[in-house]
Length: 104
Image (cartoon, rainbow, N blue to C red; front, side, top):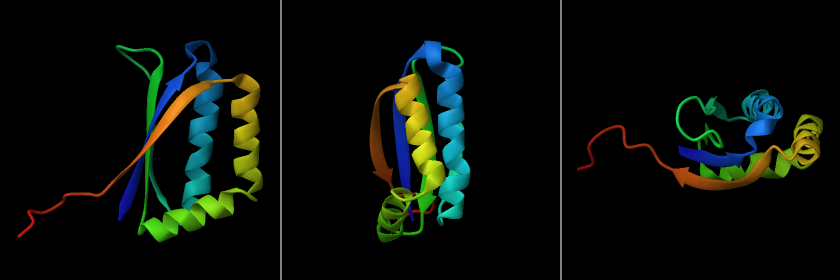
């Protein structure tokens, strides 16, 4: 399994638009074979940092997802929302693997 961790720097004045954007990806990821672990919005502390986590069985499955979203109407609408609202200033994508049991 590979988990994609997204760290967003957002415009706090566009929090509502960002929430629509980031939660809109949950059904897209699920429909295209992934497991979405949630979106995490600012609450206490920094008001311009948010996170999202989702997993795919393999890196190859993630790459298939990346190819599929290019033609996906819901994904395109989410990108339009992001561009129109300018709710995302920048983001970082990190890939993680779970450590669920001790390695021998």
